[in-house]
Image: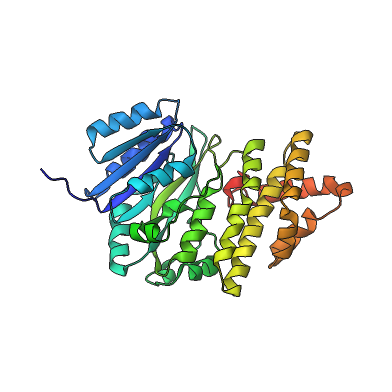
Length: 343
């Protein structure tokens, strides 16, 4: 019997998430759309994740396993995109879950609107292994009034200040990705940030559906919440690639908006440097932060009052390091629930 061509390819990179993987996979295979392929990339897991993936694949032939040495989520997603056969692509992190019927709902909407990308919403929760604490607000600051409006991706960057980077809360037309040679960045961290901006800069038909389709887990051991010195160093070193997205924006209005958003990202990296308890590690990170000229970039792109305040404290002399540390800790406490990197 000839196998039906899938409508949607769901891509799931997996690295040592055995504790959450079954819930993730259940949320996909139970979607109300049978014409789907589920590409699960085992990125060198050593915790039993591969065994779970294999068990599920034996029960559901829509699951395709790509088993590879660890290269990071970016390479895993890029490899899976090259394998994808469906006309549309969705992403799901292996410690997160889809809500019921989101794949079918997103697929119907992007087909109806002939879109390059359709954004949908989600909700976050903290998981300490015992209880889940859900955040009250939707993940993106969008609502019903944004529905059924089709516009270039740059419009949505302007509408939201660019704060819709999460790749999993969207459905993409695969031909749009292929035609524009869109890939996740080659860094081990911050790769979704680069991919998001390149997609939104290139896309001409982007819409939003006010649908809570994604549940994002905040966990202490995840890569996104990792505050190790290596993780912060990698983000600082990869900032140049993120900054390169500005080369593709000609409209000065949107260059200013995106420059400001990149400055916020750089400011968060500064906070991550400052809140370290180990003095030697803090000094190493601050040296790299300055060498990458992120301080100067923030100063040149301080286009609202928050960035002006951040730039003021970041630019204080070394003699006021103690004040910078107090300020950075206050920022972390104030924005921890809004900025995952400060978790």
